[in-house]
Length: 219
Image (tube, rainbow, N blue to C red):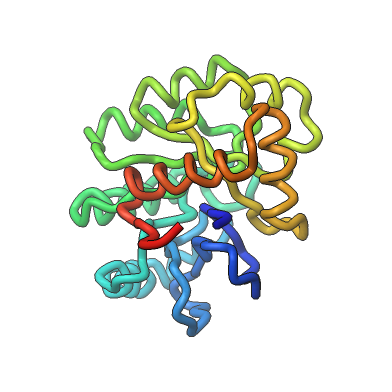
């Protein structure tokens, strides 16, 4: 079974378990596992209260495994202080419900980790689409958080070196909004780590169980 921690495209593959990214006001009515959150790029100040209410409703459903993707983005047009406010509001919900968070970070890793520490957040963060250096990775892992790798792994040699040396319980695999299939990413990832695809799948199954609380009954 292929595990995809973050995707914007539902696949029709029977051998894939995926966490589909949902937006509160643009709900895709399906029975898939999902995460839900207000992305920093799409913050609308007039709709925040309504969206937070929807998030609180949806996370009580069985198929919701995480809040996200949420976070901070220094390249988007949304006021950064407003981004921080909305981010903190969603973190409070996640902490109250003891549910992990899928993190979107653009040039804001230090701010996000500082907020986590200052708010004394205990639930796991999963920094999706990780493509930074070893120093940032170390800071993330020090706070008992995780990273997820996707299409950047296929192109970035430094990232490949980092990925090859990570403990298997520290990372997830995704295809995000990419058209690259999760199967192709697993094939590439298993080659980098010099393990079989099956071994990588079993490691990811353990991570889903331990971090997301989701267990596949039959492998």
